[in-house]
Length: 452
Image (cartoon, rainbow, N blue to C red; front, side, top):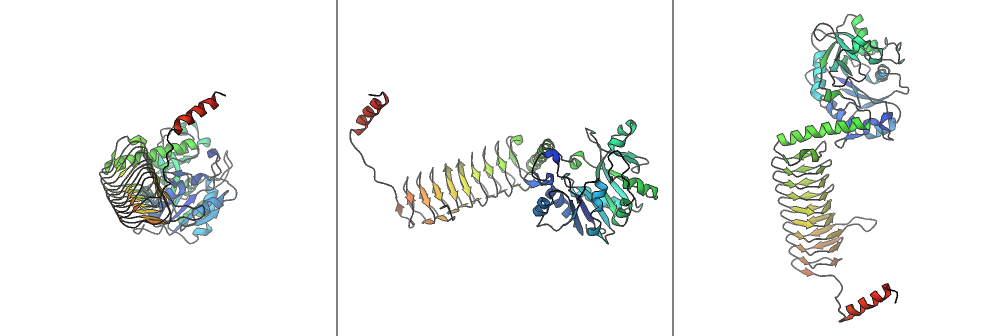
């Protein structure tokens, strides 16, 4: 945030999430094709933090490997002694940082950048509250800690669910666990936190009461439940995915995309659909898809890592893999697969075709059952098909091979040599005919079956 003091962020990610029952660390499970912690860190990065510290524990190597390309530091919590203890592990990494510190959780991935900014802005107001807690009112109160307000947004008391009285549990305002604290105060308050509670843990929210004892007036600000819901199980992961998809579909339609059956279309975190794109039922977009205006994605297609130009048609039942490119007005039809291939302007591959490591020129027509044989068991090779070429049905193009512009490949050919421009290339065995042999064959076969 360039309009305030430099901020830092501490992201707690030491818990592996035993309820996930997985060999993969909890925060590395994906939502819409992006890991939980990457969703969160992308939002943090929009605030341009001076430092981001991720607190890791068991299976730390998984997180450190997954985040190796990010500008963040790691702190280790060897024993999980509570959230307050976890934050303490980041102290040395933030030495000398006196500005705002955001305290976040790796398994709460959907906190919006604007919500983080609100936390920081409130912390820096003239009344200097010391701590700003992010609170919310859930439909299901579960075992959330409670935030008891006094005057206005000032906090009168905070208590963990297991330590709360029945009267306190009746309060609907719950603690998300996330907050903003001045770096100059944070670790001094954490040093005073006790583990004298039913769990024997050092609770992060206890710093609120410690700050109040020192004359500060911590406050709470509200957030939408959808932003602050944590993910601890496969069911909660599925619920988060459903929530993300619901919002993504609404955003797409608001931007001018037609979804014939919205609930059956699944987006990735970076799906980019232009206005007047039409998406039929049961389409899945993996990461890295961009579709230009006026194109139609027909039913039961799967797209990933591909670029679709304007006024193209894909499917039904098509699969576009990473590196697939359709230029203006190109078409792939049912049961066509493309990988690392370009289909030029107005080119068509309508049926039952595999195009791998290939370039297809403008206006070319690829017949049904055509295969580019791009892999010899060791290496991948290229196939080049020129503009206006016609590839007959059930042809195999054994790469590396070039089919010239305007050339024709006869149906059923296995092409191992280049075909010159405007030439006809045919590579198949001669057809032979044996008059009358079909009848005698049937007689022998029937006798054999009947044991005669």
